[in-house]
Length: 71
Image (cartoon, rainbow, N blue to C red):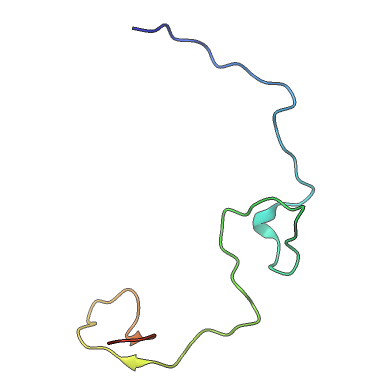
């Protein structure tokens, strides 16, 4: 078996951003900002409320409306 090596601390390896990319709005994210870990969505678009009501959604966790092509 191979020997265990202790982890090495690499100096200057941390990347520090001026702002947390997870707390920025969609309009503030640009080319120089970090990659957020969460999806921010588009705040200019409202949530869809139209669609057809589907059957068999007694304990549904996703809702009772179906949206999109149903063929």
